[in-house]
Picture 1 (spheres, rainbow, N blue to C red):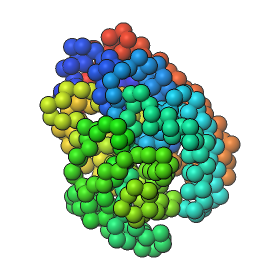
Picture 2 (picture 1 turned 90 degrees about the vertical axis):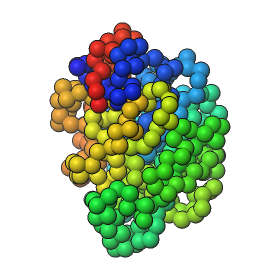
Picture 3 (picture 1 turned 30 degrees about the horizontal axis):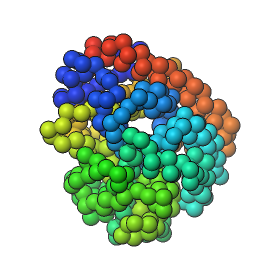
Length: 357
């Protein structure tokens, strides 16, 4: 294995990469998972991939993310991805809260972060990008999970979690998947049908709303109401149904690569599946995926031997300076991930290093 990165591929991607290596034009989709502050460990990998590796690309590149993955991709889709990622990273790390912040307070902070890295010019750049086609995932809530009152919302989420334990498809009674897509080109995953779905074209009127909704964690943040272009209602975190994006990325006949820079080597289908160790992704959805994630050896070199996590807000409660220093140190260490990726693909070593997913 690479010292800092591990490469695992699905059954269609594996023989192709072993034979040909990996080049930018062979990548058709890039996927970005939810996971809160965990995304920070990927920020330098994102910088390298989107500012350098894809720089000479000509064909369309579909990128799809939920929650933190959506915010990452809202940054990399701008004309200057490095500056946009740095603005997002700085604003995100500087979050600070009281001991028990209200959903309204966290939403206010979320809007601050969003406005820091995405202005009207950035929205125009995303919608006019020469090759990137941005796609975002959120959910539209049904029944009690559409309430903004804590008791019915908590009750609804508990029932949804129980139903999800029986079968993931039962989430359709509580949530409708929402795909916000770049209308210039229909993405290959447009017709995914595991859950009821709304497909909403992104535009300058709904871009910010869609990004905020995609990261609006139930009970932690307020839902986003009546997003322009949608059928109305309360919209929340796309990670509820699509935590690590277990979706049919490509058509069966397509041999393109789905590049998945990830903070772990486990694919967790939905938010309620985090503790369900038996819940696995659909194998056919992973056929074309190349999962790129930090090695255990790399993680062991990080401060506290772990990547940033949302539980750090509680761990460092009242000590925001310490948390911010810890997160910045982890991000600094992650510079080696971008360097490792470029060296591995440019040298062709990926053909020997890639393993089955």
